Length: 297
Ligand SMILES: Nc1ncnc2c1ncn2[C@@H]1O[C@H](COP(=O)(O)OP(=O)(O)OP(=O)(O)O)[C@@H](O)[C@H]1O
Image (cartoon, rainbow, N blue to C red; front, side):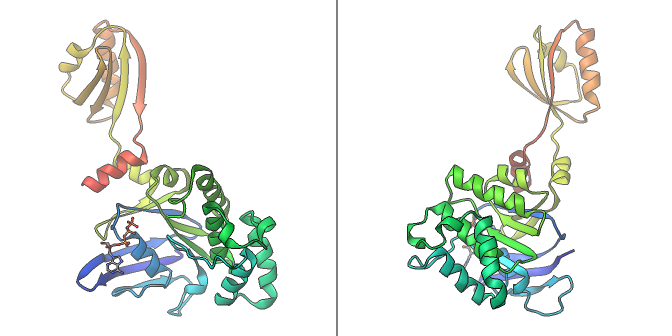
């Protein structure tokens, strides 16, 4: 494990934003932090990044006995602020000095990072003239400059247009083989595309901590979609393992069952009753379906 979080909590005066939560982050994993507005995502990420002191609990980095682990982390805040009068290169120089990148390495790291985020051609242009997408890529460059082990991104794509969002997601995808990545998002489709692990917060409590695959398996709804040539309601009404049937038309239906094993029995019964099967489909829950179930639980 790269990071082990134990009973971490945060109180802002009387309000508890994060109740004691415990989880670990595996080295090389890509993790999405999900949860509704006010769930405590930013607070948790800021504590992990060493920018906010926890009220209680510990954050331990593998192989680091020191309390300050900020050098191992790159952080892109939800609303990064830039000095608009600086050029991209000047900003990175400033960020590199702040994060103690050795002088000799800084020039090389700046070139590499600017090339990676595709800003090398505009490195001497003032940030004030940059688009939202360019600013976000510059923010990412700032977070990557000191080659962190853990990259933390707080809603990295939420303010971007579709092209900017695709750009940043592609960069995250490329970084996955090089470092551990934790990012918060409200866009479940992005989490599903990019991440293998999911953390879910609600009201400051951890509702899920595990792989995306296990999350989907645990909340599998055992649903199928059927289409027959003849109406089938009369047949389905006789089958007691069917939990719910939602008719699209008399011959097309979405069915929820107790167990997948029952689908064979269902098909056999339909054929025996002289119905002609046109379409049979196992319906897979999307992360959005599963998210709603976990949050409503
Ligand atoms: N500095 C602060 N002082 C007091 N309360 C705060 C402070 N920062 C956050 N909170 C409260 O703590 C709770 C968690 O906030 P947080 O920003 O961590 O949630 P979030 O999950 O990141 O939300 P969002 O998705 O809207 O960004 C909220 O109820 C918020 O109002």
